[in-house]
Amino acid sequence: MSGQSHRLTRRLFHHRKFRTVFVLILIFTVVLGFTIVPIEATSPLARIHTSEEGLWWAVTTVTGVGYGDFVPITTLGRVVGALLQISGVLMFGLIIGIIGVTLTKRQEEYSWFRLFDRLDQLEEKLNALEKKSKFLIHNGEEKG
Image (cartoon, rainbow, N blue to C red; front, side):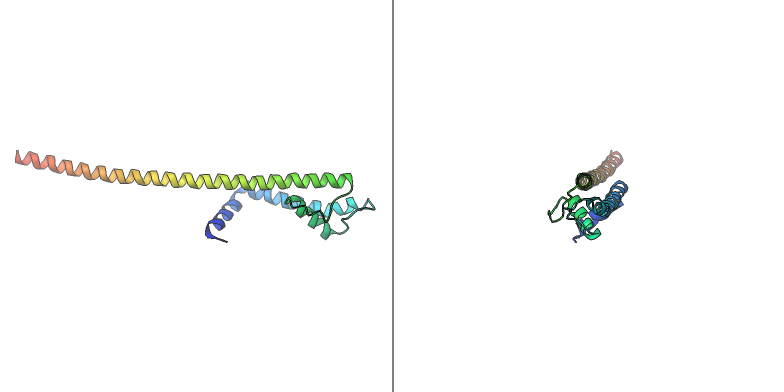
């Protein structure tokens, strides 16, 4: 992982709202992954039979991959799938939004830093000119 992406990842996980939503969606995914097994067990055509298959299905559903190797057959199972899809969209939307805000904030910080640096340089030049003009005025008064 490059230094820039490592810093961005660290910033994301220090963002309290992101961390909270990420953990909630992670818990939500695991719970629904286990919950889908007994829900689908009510159908003889069910493809999800074990907790491992349920977790795999939940992760592929929440990430939007959806391989199709495991799909819910029951109406309640499909509702659970829809909830996972919506939470996945929310999670990735949140990640993208926070990345955008973080990058914009860094760019603004950089611009302000450059502006203040330029102002400091101008202030130094102005002070030097002020000293020089005082020196010239003082020398002019002594000669005159």
